[in-house]
Length: 299
Image 1 (cartoon, helix red, strand yellow):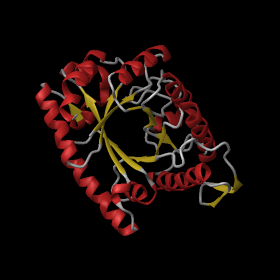
Image 2 (image 1 turned 120 degrees about the vertical axis):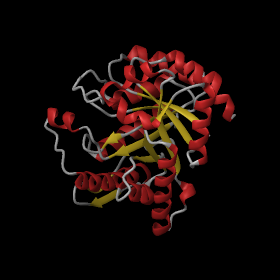
Image 3 (image 1 turned 120 degrees about the horizontal axis):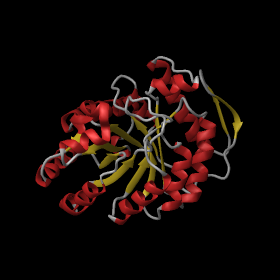
């Protein structure tokens, strides 16, 4: 079992985030990630939110050891060639510590605000599957040609390459008809947020079924879950506001022993990573408590 922290970019500053990232790394966590939103991801319509690629670069330069992830970049915001080139440069900046998470996108209000197309879910998922193939090719091949419904590459190059021979690409989401099939076909990792252990185990089983159909060894795909941390009820409301009830099934709460038991249930369900999803106001005291009282139980 490994632990990380997913740091939301809404209602915060770059200085606050830099201090938080140093604190997380100092506690020995192995992962820090950012999200990809232009508006706050809390159904309020608040537009106070830092841009993802720039903040991802700041994360890479602020830290020295942790893996620097994204959960997840929306393929509807950036052409895959733009994203691939950004990730290759970020990997150089980080010394080979970037993990790229990709998803189909979901927060329609920010698409609408900027006049970005927000097609039906089926179309967005087809875009996702094409995008992951384009990015993979650009990051690993000398020349990439791809002819798809949504994206086209013609003898395209991405230089310089990442420092990693294979920069990990994770697929985010739990959709059992399409998303998990895409993960089985293309992903190095799979991440799903805010579901209880028994639901994680069931979806992981679906992923393994798709792996069998695709002739893929499921052990090649890292399994990760994002969870909230709310030692007190008020902590949950303060961080998640209007969507508190939606995320509650995947939130760690209660006593230290109860949190340890809950993480143990995720481990038994097949999670290799438990990633704490934090957003401002950041509960640094709660983070410190987790690092000193919970993480050692899984050493």
